[in-house]
Image (cartoon, rainbow, N blue to C red; front, side):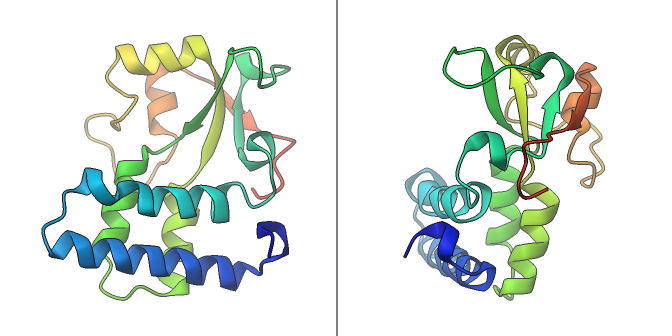
Length: 160
């Protein structure tokens, strides 16, 4: 079955199974680096990219990225909240079910299309894998606000 043909419930069920697996192996002492991909890949392909393209998956686009497309190395697919934050929240769930998974994905799994230069700005400020100091844990766009990167809704997004 193709991802586009799967119901949201089925996609969330599969992601929940991946989360449960990662919780089990983490509890057994497996380092995060050894199982992280087992969570990242189902989320990427079953949730983020359920509409197909990276362009359709992104909810936001920076003003500087308007008009850019993939293929020329100038556009970056960026998680607004670095994946490690979502991963930690998923691993901490006591009840791994569709509603709890959906809520965390909707809150922390937002994608922005930014320019390569903007990505470098985030890296230079130490914000490529971290949220700003004093982050309230709620504003998923805090890294961009901190760096003055103006975002607009991505018109090509299928799932906003």
